[in-house]
Picture 1 (cartoon, rainbow, N blue to C red):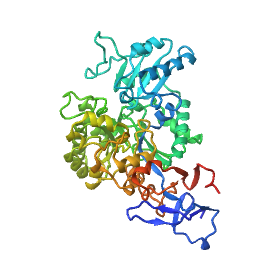
Picture 2 (cartoon, rainbow, N blue to C red):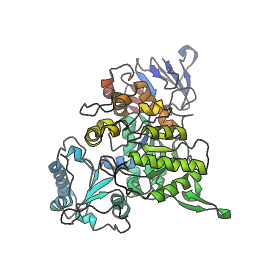
Picture 3 (cartoon, rainbow, N blue to C red):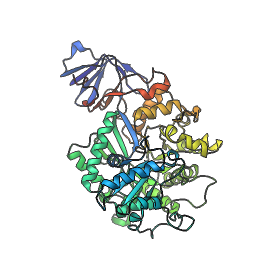
Picture 4 (cartoon, rainbow, N blue to C red):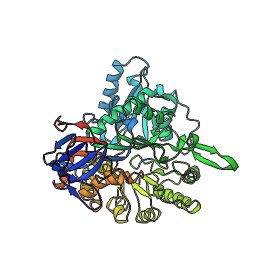
Length: 535
């Protein structure tokens, strides 16, 4: 054995609920529980002094590049920014120091935190027309730009279902939603490969501090969440340079896939050379293909029953391409927030399974924010994995309580219902739409209260054990990795976290206060908060 962790409270994380007082590691794997120290002579013994050990946290839906880039941009989600005047002051301060033509990018604003108001183009132009100004909303589905950027963009390809927003005089407000927002990335703001590599490294440094050892990047390459056609290659470069510190699964955007013609007239839908879900290794691999079917509930762009009849995205293109991707061997991760969007996705998946049967494709619905009882039953029948973000209860719950009716709220951000139906539930954050700290997500999955303290679907609350298992085993299962990740059973990768308290023993309302003391990946200590666990 390389290492023995002893005098510990090890939560193995498997279905049996096992615990252990010690853990033996060798060559990056867990090889023994309850090690008899007298019988082995490891390279290192670590006395954890009764601390709790859990499987490494696995974020099943986050945006690593976006988050890493945001760490160098204006933090408009900072608690000090309380109204639009604060936003404009931050932009003005940046304009005063930025050379002419330099971009001013801010991220994380939300009307809920700005008195119900949003930044506007005329106000940004009054601050500066010497710099492109791009302020991205916390959802990532919208942004506000000044006229400098607006002049750089060509919107002629956009569908008539998504016209640019204008004011009473017919002038642009500067608000860009969905595909219009994506135009900024695709046409005006290309990032260099080195920018993306550096962003990955910055993000992973932060991930390890909060105990994240595996992450699934929810969209690379193109569209709303993509950062260029070579973004997948940037992850490979990050690995070569030692900056890929967290096990990473990449979800290529459906916009980055294309028809691949084979002999005898066969056509597949995929990446170049025909690779698909599962290509790679335990450090860097290709996961599901990412589709978008709607927008955001709070932004009013989600596909809702009783909402606008015209869907926000082209449903016929989506239906055809979802079926093509299923037929071509892909796992699918399909963004759907509204109840109508969830039902549409299930219709497509049901048709795919009927026409092209496959064993255990494990298709996913990302967010599944509003799901009816009938939709949950269909998910269970089809083996679909819902991926809601528990932290959204705290972050946006107040806005949803004021927006949705009681029937819709009963179906929103479900967790207990999914488990009761026999579904596997992952843990995820949608970082940087939330802080991305797993203990905060687990806290909200257990307590089901908004950040202001209002109850939000208390009947959907999980136990701490269930929430921990979602953030480890559930996320590993969602990417076909449960045979090697997600628990601390013998044979699994030695990815683990040392906590300063046991989440299953503290008062539920104090789970959010639990801190990560140390993080191990493949048996190697990669984060040591106090410098004490390396000894």
